[in-house]
Length: 86
Image 1 (tube, rainbow, N blue to C red):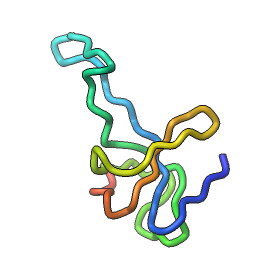
Image 2: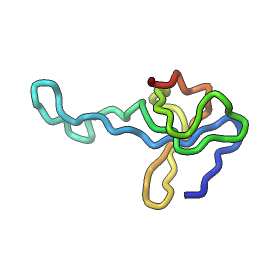
Image 3: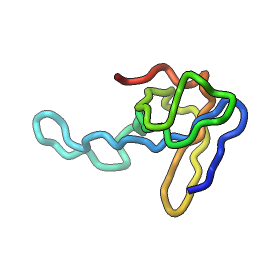
């Protein structure tokens, strides 16, 4: 994949969360919230504190979804990234 974010942006692949509750009830896709965690797959040259491979938490309704090679990603400004999961 060849995609280079511009400005202070990162490209993130969302990490899908479990679709069942602790008691085993399956939550339908249309009732699930969009995941707010993801893996950084590309970073702009202006970003120094986030790198590819980091798992980050970001604002739920931030960024723009794009499709590359049949996969869905989200492009987010770094100010919408709350932190890196260690």
